[in-house]
Length: 445
Figure 1 (cartoon, rainbow, N blue to C red):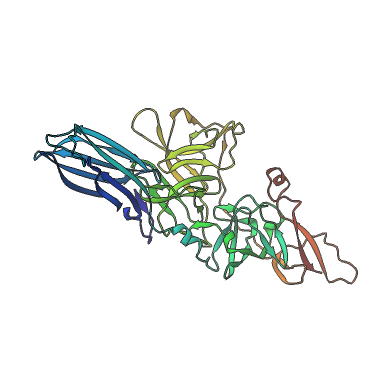
Figure 2 (figure 1 turned 60 degrees about the vertical axis):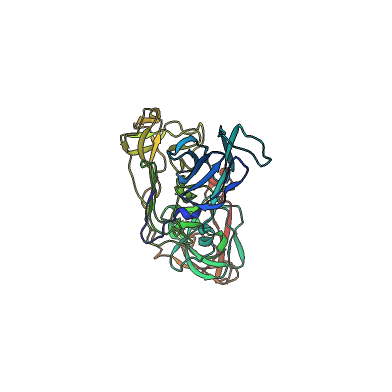
């Protein structure tokens, strides 16, 4: 696998550990240890009147590790058996092969042997650094942007702005200060920066200082990264500011790299990222790509897949079975693949591009009624020059933003408060933050 990533270290096969055991026909362990891949060894052994060499080879390719133990007999090294295993991660397996016993072969009890059994046992796992956990234990950089995780609890001015579990998508913010496990962040006007947008609603026109737990910040790509898989055909490119993290309940490995789940704003993909590619913040000037409708598009499957890389399927987020009639993801390029069961295409989602394989029948001409899934216009900031100072109900400064035109002040009052909606009216249907969810902001007369 080739990974184009400036300034970051690439993992070695030493991060893959194989527990390997080769047992001879007498029950003796010729090898019984953990080895790093690739691995090779030759062990000579004499049984009865014959001499043998057990030639062991192990390597990791793609999603699996292979190991074999060729049994070579005599000076001419004639192969008479070869137990072999194709192993997925953390799944022990064994294989045995038998050969005819030579003259004079006896077991440990001194009994004559007619059959020799050669046994191979193996399993493999990731033994390298848990660099994903290391990245999550770091700190975001002040002045950069970060992403709040879906469901993040958000505080401001001594009140709960958003309850834990309310938001259903990543929310971009600016990092203002870091104090241990507490982070002060600022909402971004228009709610958009890079790959993600904040919940739609009035709050997106304000720049407010809020407090969140560092644990509620998502890991993000800190630089663009392109992964070219060992199949020499499929690739994934992620722009800066893409959210990523561990795959729930699994620690898969592809091409000797940890597989992570990336969320690009309109897409989701499992991708083999190298150590050092993720952090808790990304440069504030990160943009988002813009792409148009081509002459052809790919119809998503019922589960939202628009193609497959060696790392896994590329999914459109929010695509629901039965709701995507007429929806297609645009294809920017096509390429040939071996055989006629699959075709190669290049597709994009927000902040990502993928060379994938799909069934040819899913590639269709794009017509006027096709809805382009995942297309996002380039981010344009909203000018807050007309904004005024905003305060929390406890009178502490909250930030800046527009004062509601119909805000009413009590007699002789110099400050009044207003419930600003956090989301939009449709969000309630999806269990997210809705316009009915408000936060109290105060303004001077």
